Amino acid sequence: MTPVHFSFTSAFILGLMGLAFHRTHLLSALLCLEGMMLSLFIALSLLALQMEATGYSVAPMLFLSFSACEASAGLALLVATARTHGTDRLQSLNLLQC
Amino acid sequence: MTYLVSLFLLGLVLGLVAVASNPAPYFAALGLVVAAGVGCGVLVGHGGSFLSLVLFLIYLGGMLVVFAYSAALAAEPFPESWGDRSVLGYVVVYTLGVVLVAGLFWGGWYETSWTAVDEFKELSVLRGDTSGVALMYSHGGGMLIACAWVLLLTLFVVLELTRGLSRGALRAV
Figure 1 (tube, rainbow over the protein chains, first blue to last red):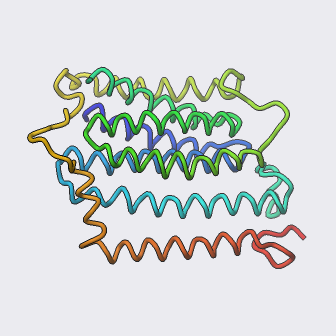
Figure 2: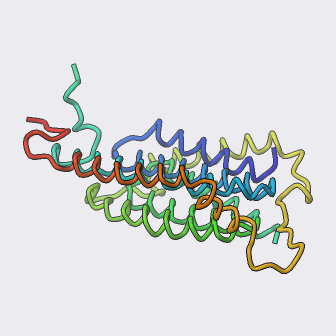
Figure 3: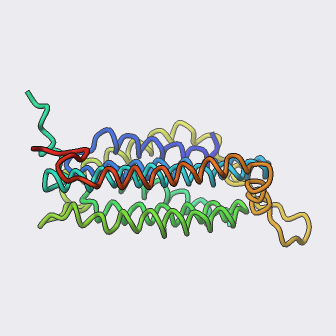
């Protein structure tokens, strides 16, 4: 595995672990998701650049637009949570707790 | 040049370590800004100047600005930075994990396998990624319309989620 591939692969896995093991804030989980999107954008761009297949340069652009949609939906959920529960801390999301 | 791009790759991994260790969201957003900045440097080192510009403008200048001021929703009186005990534990574990896995691949990382040097065959105004993105407007027109439709749909999704009153998506009472 070349160093470039190792870098964005480990960046993706780190973001995934940060998303899985997030502790207090919902916003930190959303930020880890954005980190995963960043590593995927870099991976798609480097695919187009290293293979010199310039037709695949469209993929990172479309990916970025879909990622923007996802980020905005996540932030809307964060705002709705903060408006309902007063905070975005995960301790307050306990309606389903037995 | 190889050294600079390898420093940027290290910055990408360390920036994501800073985000994944879950400090207070102020500091995680800072780590993400640094990671995106050096990620743009990696793309420029491979000759993708247009994609790097798009990443800076849309990702850093659009999405992360919104995350930065949404961090005000997560305000707390004593934000945890990377020096606090619990966050430092995560930082150490993630860094050690990356170093250990890099040690597995260390044998194949010779001088020539680091990065692809930007190949500049002729003098040209149009670089590869710029002219590749132009395909989005010609043959990729259907996908462009689909993305625009999805963005419009997301606008209505966001408006509906944050509308609230007593019939909104998330209500405790």
